[in-house]
Length: 497
Image (cartoon, rainbow, N blue to C red; front, side, top):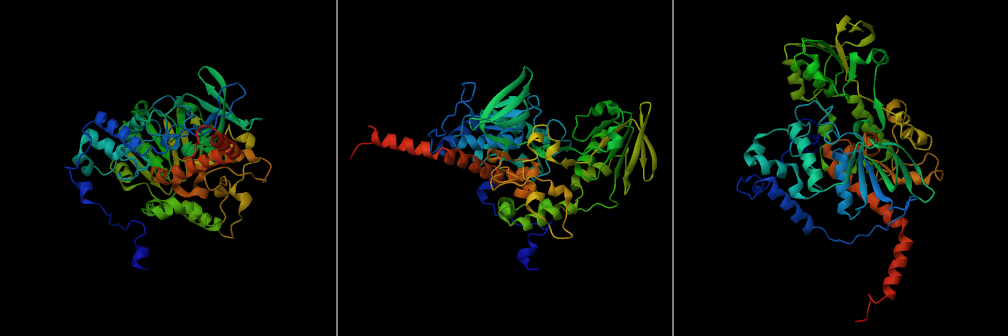
């Protein structure tokens, strides 16, 4: 293997080209958020060309102007997408999130890690505006030295940064609004059924974008024999868990990935008398293929690979099953009230009063509460809003048959997307409106790589997604724009020199 190839092997450090100005503490930075926000406004003004509003209005059946785009999901991906559209002067947009304000995404709810898993310098939310970067936001409050001393960003700070990002950009987010269904409208629009605290509401839009994260194209993976227990005895790692209520209790956690380890540590740190963490793998692989893929070529251009190569890459990623990050592993093994059961599976369960009796391959265990860190199922038929369209959405199994030995039923259920994250018809010509629905969620990984499933991909994914939305908005109305140009040419706006 050449030195150049070895540089892209996991866990091999690579040198970063850093100009002296980036590490000089005398380099001018905002000294507080007020100064930083002024810098944001200034930088946005500097790069705002062209400034002309250009998307032609469409009238909805209720007489209002239809939204140019609706984004479902107000987490980091949804916010970045909204900003990306606004920068391209697609202004008549709305972000819907089913959660109360402050509970969008994982950071204030089910994300129980202490820090982001990404390195602190991983960015992308800024979309090239320096003052919008996480580093600028952090240094404005805590200074350059604090940034240099920090390894990874605490999740609470990332949560605060997202709230600031939403506010400083004045992004149009409607909380406690859950999309329950969507359908094509006779006027060429998409009708959305939205559940709100005030009742059901119908909205109309031209483009619909799903930015619904890890659960967006499926649901939580629940063991049937655990889900059959009384609901007071169990939770999935994605659920809200009252860890304070577990103080003095016996807690069982199942799973070998980072979320299971985080939940086990959270229960132990909250004062549970005993926490037992079970995972089927006897040993955990410290290498992580996601860390290997942190370079521009892979992040930006995975979606440009031939279909067979995308399948092989993703199939290998899924088969790799890395261990939790080293800091997460260390957090678990250093807790005296936490015991790991490596190479052990759960095979059954029953309830005895207020106790869950777990049948495991190493015997019976009794717990006051159990948590399943068992991941997610990728299956659009399990989504309420997508189920009516499941028969017309193209999946990978409809377009690609892997060679013997490379089969993967979970991947085969993934939606097969176009080059800008748009859904594809299973039978060409039967549902052309589906091309106006975009999937910037976890289920896009097989088609698009990591552009939609983590912070490292946002820098590359959002511009590609936004380009696709804008392209459609213009091309669909090209005749109208041409008519407008003819009218302009014949008006007083054009005079001979």
